[in-house]
Image (tube, rainbow, N blue to C red; front, side, top):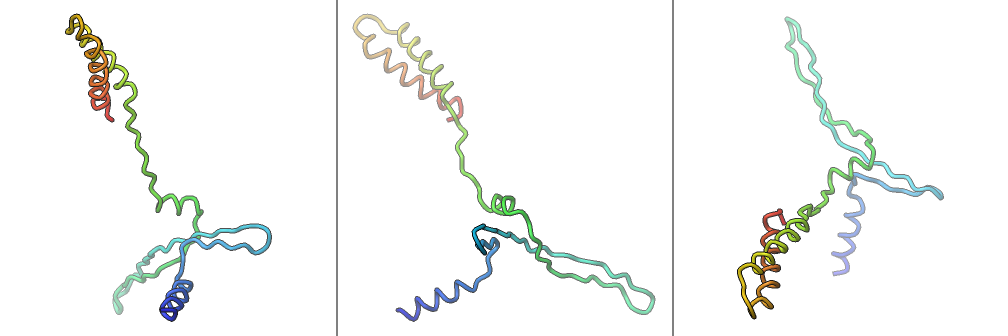
Length: 125
């Protein structure tokens, strides 16, 4: 088991990384690279045909843009506070107008809650 663990640790330390961070002195430096594919057409003549020469280049890029492309932020922008407020007011008003006497003590809060839930769904929550 120890041999397997040592092998995994030694092999993963040799793997290349996209962003290398090192600290030569008291300052911290970070370099990010991107691998790009390049092609160049070499025209031919009557005796030898033209051909395409291709290669890969490693280009240094700003680290902020390289990291932001790989990290996606999962944010929920569905805010239903306006729809919930309006739905609650309309639900309580509808419950007030449709209930009579002793039924109002439970009908108004129930109408407000159900109206707030429906308003939230309509608003995009």
